Length: 173
Image (cartoon, rainbow, N blue to C red; front, side, top):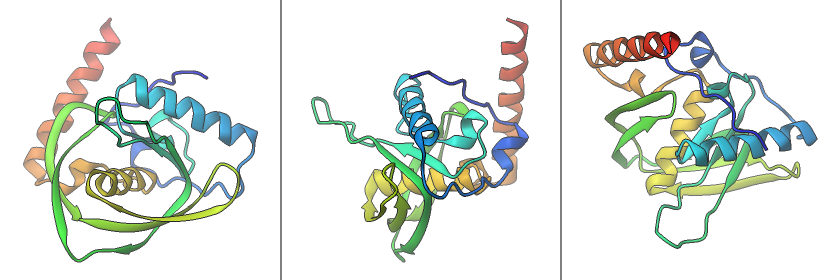
């Protein structure tokens, strides 16, 4: 397993729709393992393939945060939101591609998602709470959308300028 570099906004790949994978092979399984290792190392609770520069519809997540609780790493290939609740919830979201920036985002409180697992079987699950927010955030990445796209233009521009400055500083070192 390899820890992959995470793209930082603004990067045009983060605004591009990823392509479907279909049936997974060993390359996709190895990629999912790398992505989970990268996500845990960051540390984060979700990561989409476009965030590491691969334009494929694959995301990983693990929203278990309780001390001593068993981790629940998940890899979702070609995920689709099949249903979303009318009830909304607000979470303060962050993103590994937009480090140290957070904002409240309103999304459906629950979603039903179908996907292909690493063995090629179709799965479906209803997610609520943090899991719901995370899976929607990561599916947005697969569609070329960032959490800051939900913010007012001024706030979005302010965060984008901070990220441009961060990228310049990293380039100098």
